[in-house]
Length: 382
Image: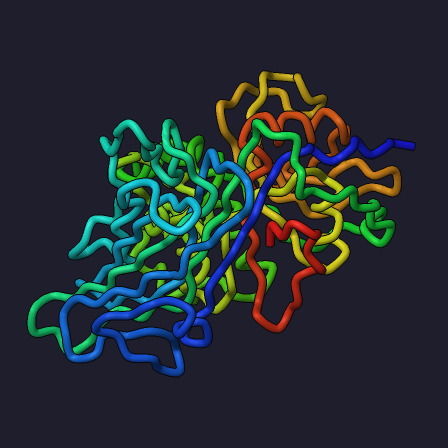
């Protein structure tokens, strides 16, 4: 029987805002509440600023996520700043200039932002010198002059972590016995079927783990894009929906399709709720599996450091689809030669270690609004 490792004693807190329901908790300028979310109110630029989110611990990193609709030519800009006590403790930093399409606007993170307080590393605000015990987010909606349509912001949130503390807010959760022996029927997609294809979107299949995983979960929920959406893929190749996802998750500054926030934003275009968070352990992940919600998780490891994962990676996304009766994780690992080889079972403690060490327990959560999340821990990280 595989025993569960104790949860990592780390402070992690996620907070999301659903719009327009939560609009009055923050402040808006030039925006109109609609049934679908916040939209521009007769102007070409408008913004919504969240209230300060105080997390009660020293923050080292903040990762944002959002869902929005952006008609062609429109975009949104996402900024974060640190907060402490009763005021901001850093300047604003831009984490994204994001658009669903790429015909008129280059979807991109914003490199080169660094000062004595913090720096931006693609999808993550890293605190380096300031005292930060909270965060604030700002989303700016933009459209070209004279456009008759504009973007709609549906949600925005962020996960804050401090991996250096003893985790005063964490609670030891019992393993969910309901997840033991439960394997969700997530389709198996191999990223390596696309090796060498479309180098303009990140070099092809060997680097497409994240959009391949995102595509698997959209298919699982019956929410993947319709064929006419990816009819542009010519020749169609082995699975054009993955090519479509890679293109629409691609970060032009990062030069890859692995931006965490861009992947959940892409998923959000297809009728699911999606966000990035961090989990402290596989015990927390079991709660999602028991609720019927597979997770995309990010790990880093050396070849065979975890038996069954025979390759080196500095960062790789896989789908956690379930657990064996003994509690070992069952994965859909897209780094496989074909679809049949995608399903892998790996030792629990070894995998948990490389997931926590490699990304701090990053997980993408994708689900229809009709599927409830499991109850969060006392220090909520979802």
